[in-house]
Image 1 (cartoon, rainbow, N blue to C red):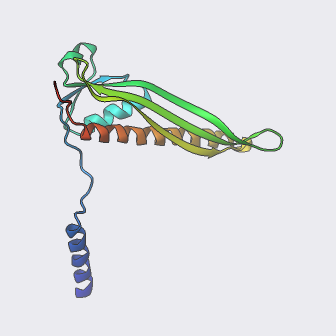
Image 2: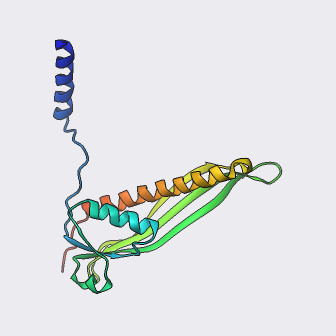
Image 3: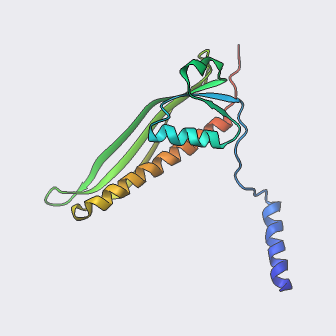
Length: 168
C-alpha cells in the first residue's frame, strides 16, 4: 500500500515538475465581441456557444450593438465539399472526401484588422457503400460536425492569442 502511495506521489511530482497543467480558457484582450455571423447556422450556433462558455467574453448579436463591441468577428465564407476520390470498376462511388473551409477575420468597429482574413480547412475520408446508404449519411453528418467543432476550437484559440493592433 505504501509503495502505491509513493508511486502516485512521485508521478504527481514529475507531472508538476515538468510544467504540465490542464488546458484553461484563454485570456482575451477584449471584453465584448459582436457576432458578425448568423448564430442560427450550425457553425454559428457552436461558435457562439463556445464563446459564451468561456465566461470572459460578452457576445453581442444585435446589429445595433456592433459599434459598442470591442471587436467584430466576421465569418466571410463557409464552404462544404463532397469530392469523389475513388470508384470501382463499374463506376460506382467507393470513397469520398469531405472538406470544410471557413474564412474569417477579426476587426474593430472602426475597421482596424486584428486578424486578417484567414482560412481554416479540414478534411475527412469516408468510404461509401450503397447498401448502407443511411448509415453513411449519418456518418457523413457526424464527420461534418467533427470538422466544424475542430474549426470552432481553432477560432477560439486564435481569438485568445490575438494581440491588439499597434495604432500608428
